[in-house]
Length: 390
Image 1 (cartoon, helix red, strand yellow):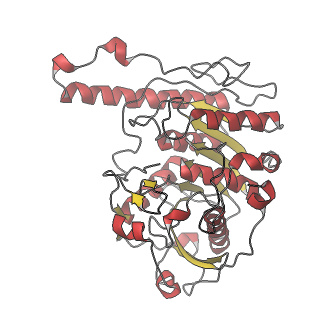
Image 2: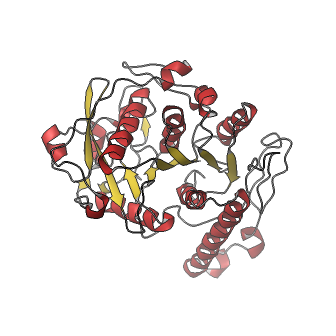
Image 3: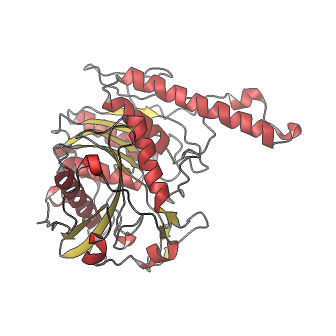
């Protein structure tokens, strides 16, 4: 879609909730409840009164439609005026052209306590305020998840951040995303001027926009590159598995290449995801974000990512030896095989280095780090979130 359509904001309104402003020192915990797959698949309806009764939610009117967007805010690890915000990937599986969800067996009901625990973990990891932001129609937010990847979902997400910022007196945000959530972050870069670190994992950043349907328009993040490269105060990181089966690595690397060609600075780190689809990199994205927020160098981030993968691989290998009969266990040589190489034209003319990201003439990471294979679930056991299906 035309770039001006992507970056043009609708007139958004966000009325104050009856509960009033919440000071960080007295954050009210989000009340736990279960969000069922059946409800999310139908679309979630909440009234303004119901939204106002929730301790962590904002009521928005965006493009003439009302939304209640849930967020799960934690100060378990510290707090300041620049929280880390996490956006999860798509849920509910694939969407049939008829509008029906093709929901897989891996889609589970969501206990919002799990979302709060994730926010707690991110807060401890980053040492500051953390927010798990519910996407439209899932994770406790109202609306229909069928609008995912549309400019409507983008504007709702942007409006939610703006109201949360106003309510809590934040100065800006560090954004961390997985897949569809990371794609939203890419587009938010064109809309906002208050993003510190933007870490995008397994995102389709250079995919042709879907054709308009049902009154919705869709976006291609790469169309906004001329605007994005002007945001010099934002540090952008892309986390890529070269063998990603759901968000092709080439769409991520092409975005990185085009950002650099337009004069922008961006870092890309090559990892190996742990799930069968080689898609779930949120653990790596969160680690990279924590490093970015403390102003770590690309070389430091690369080294820490490598150590993280090695730790996971060692733990998974030990688990495999315990659970698998000796005759069926893989040989050590196979387990220690290097991660697959990216295509030669991914980061020309820079050679990918295992321990240290390649740098351009300005010292900004250009190639990314290739790390040893990992074999542990991407979401830590302490955060039992159902895996997104995108």
